[in-house]
Every structure is written in C-alpha cells, then in structure tokens.
Length: 407
Image 1 (cartoon, rainbow, N blue to C red):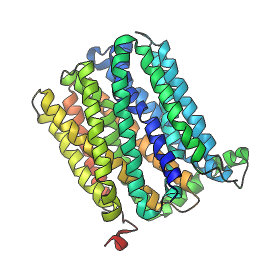
Image 2: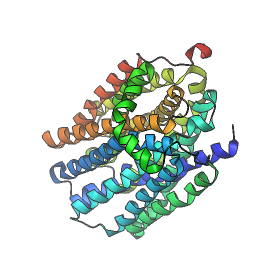
Image 3: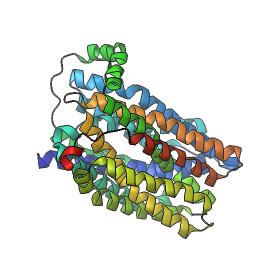
C-alpha cells in the first residue's frame, strides 16, 4: 500500500468536506431557506427539498455513464477535476445572491451540488486501487475521519466570516476546496490509457447502458447491496440535508448555536469513523452497518417524542453523528469489496446512482409532510425511519465476500 497515495486520497476528503458542512448542512441551507426564499408556511423547506432532489436526479442519471466513460477512456482524474471546478464555481457565485433570488439560488445550488456529488464518483473509485481489501475499511474510515476534521474547521472559520460578510463564507469554501485538493491530483495514480477515445467511450456509455445495468443485475451480491443501500442512504442523506432546518425551526437553535452544534457533530462523526474503521476490516462492513442502522432508526423515531429541548436534540444529534461517520465509511468499503477489477468508476457510478436517486425521495417526503402538516417537522423526521428499517432488512440478503476469512 502506497502511503503517499493513501494520504493524498484522504486529503481530498479533507478538501471537499467543508462544502457539505457549510453549504449543504448548515450555513447555506439556512441562508437559502430563511433569507433567499423565506420560510413562511415551510415554503423555504419545499424549495430546498426540490433543489436537493433535482441535483440528486442529475447525478443519479449521469454517474453510471460517466463512470463507464472514465474506465473505458482512462479519464478518471480529468473528470474528477471537471466536477471539482463545477462545485467551486457554483459556490463562488453564491456571492451574487440576495433575498428574493429564489430561482437563481436554486440554479446555483443545483450546479454546485452536482459538481460536488459528481467528483465523489471518481474519487471513491480510487479506493480499491490504492488499498488492499483487508485495509479498505481502515482507509475509508481515515478519509471520512479527516473529512470531519475539515467540516469542523470549516464551520469554525465560518463563524467570524458570517458576522463580517456572508459572501466571505462562500469564498472560504471555494478556496479551501481548491487548495487542499491539489495533492490528490498530484499523487493519486495517473489515468491509464483506455481502450476508447473519450468521444467513442461517451457513445458506448450511452448506447450500452442496458448492458452495463445487466452486468450489475446479474451480480447477485452487488445487486442486493445496492438495493439495500438505496433505502438506508436515502434516510442518512435526508437527515443531513434537513437537519439544520429542524434544529432551527422546531428546536429554536440560533444560527451561532447551530454552527457550534454541527462542530460538535463533526467531532462525533470523526470518532465514529475512526473507532469503527478497524472493526469494519475485522468484523466485516455488514455487521457494522447492521448496528449503525438500528441506531439511526432509534434516533429518527425519538425525534418525534423528545421534549422541546435543545439538550435532548443535541444528545440525539451526537448519537446520529457517531453513526454518520461509520455508516458512510463502512458502505464505501463494502462496495469496494464487491467491485470487479477494472470497473471501479463504472460500478461506483451505480453506487452514486442508487445513493442519489434515492435522495430524490427522502427530501421530497420530508418537505411534503412538513408542508402538508403545517410545519410538523418532527413527524417528517420520524417518517424517515421507514427508510432505515427497509435498508436494514434488505441488507440481510447480502453476503460479505470476506466473512469466511474473518470468521
């Protein structure tokens, strides 16, 4: 295992993680919902859910084809750079937003979020190439753990900038992403010469989608994992996308309190990612996922019953944060174990397809329930528990290919 490549790979998680923390989970989410749109009668929640759903749909539909192009044409690193540029450009243009610019803010977020989610397809595809199977859980956990350090730092940097000028927050996120992603492009394995030119690979990817899909469906273990992942990751991502509006609207967190809460949540996620990384390799990712999904179900249901207390909400958020790091790291490691050699980006494209196409439904469910019930966000969160239960049940059909060796 090349430590320089592993370090550069993990540093990309450090580079990109400031975006979901500051933009998706806390600062921009609240800014768009409450300032740009206005959240009277949960209208901001509805627009935010639509923006998240549309960006997820675009990534879901394009990722398998682009993954296939990456593998066939040998352009993985170049495509990753293209999507990073998309994300950074969209975030930089947040500086043009103001109250009432609903459609423009919607378009910019969708553009930036497609860039962020798209680059992860190619980034994740490096995992089985740079790490042996018995270390993939640890390496995946290392990436997420370092990423949560970045998330916490990004939120801490954002606090004084918000008080000074909100536009500086977006500039900080863009620069952070650019600067710390440079080592990844320098040290990760170079693109290998592909069998096809980019143009021919693009044509092949579009015309052969049914063939690629058939390959996934015939691989029983991979197929069953992706179906289970479709449901449980929808619950996880919906919780991430909607957590800030729940904390601020239903539990009365101020903007500064929200940021400090999410700094603490990143620490909890970091602990979860690191503490269960070795367990993922030792016990297998399936056992780790089983335990964490039970915990997430408990958290989602409990939100409906707890008192109107910031302390209660904060305690549940810490528990969810611990599970967040481990569920993401274990899922990525599990997927890496199931992928045939030479088809990393192609298969991680389907990983993104399942993750992002599912993400269309969760935010829409949340936004629709909150809107239909006059803003009952507690009920909307509790409804998401069904996704964790379905995912956990379907995961039992998946066999860990290394379970025999572990035992």
